[in-house]
Image (cartoon, rainbow, N blue to C red; front, side, top):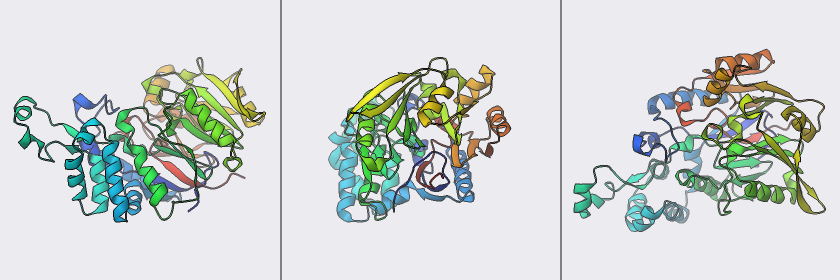
Length: 406
């Protein structure tokens, strides 16, 4: 299958998602910060909301692919499955590597491949491999259960571990250790799944020592890529990504707009404060506008050049896109209390399924009304439990194929 993403707004044809699973049930208050959560979602509620989100995608004509299914299919051959287990343990941290043999035996004993994939997502405790029986002092002195392989509760935000740009893939270097194993699933899909292996260009990889995450990558089209310079994406990563894409004609990218947003958790990625909803129409959190800086990267004389752009965001975007005018729709409108509340609940994190039609959380009533007042068709989905992970409809979707914008 040929990957094809040339814009943020072309009709969505195929999309990758992950239904929240047992990994959410492994969250406990002492580990929330390390796992990048502020609260513990109720799994049954999150699954119900996610199922409705998936049905909405299907109702809009998109083919939905599940991460667990694709990874399981990619591990069909015994040798690939065995290598996946080795790689997963290797990337699981010091404890996992130290207890490599016990983990390999446990994971290798799971005969159903999909169950194996789900187990790697849910995590493995010391109790499951029988360590407590061999550690009498630890059993007496330590009251809590220790994970030898941490759960991966952020997986339902499939946007972040890798991004499809044109017919290629940028695998992320995730900033937080809690998320760094997520890219392994996508790498095995692209290397071993019969539908996806071969043919795709690779624009970035986790072996590069600078963090880059998919929530910061927005494919605007017409040769323009926007990338957030954020809490989780570095300027060095943007330079490497830009240089690789601009030197490869098949990327279709000849300029990159780096948008420097405040380095705080509420604005962790560019798509938490800025998304495209139609041709030359964007929604933006007004809180970033007074401090936003934008830099245009282009290829000049065979080298990468960068310059800071001046003016309002609307003026900068219009110039970068080569269009007369751009419309910005403010999340929460002019009321900063509403704007801050609805941005925190992902009011700016819209998923465009076709030009002028976006999926949004129903809880952001003010922003959704403003979008409709601007002629944007909003399809509302519930997100009370899903939003506890700090991500919206765009975060929960990794488009694989979109129609070209004509």
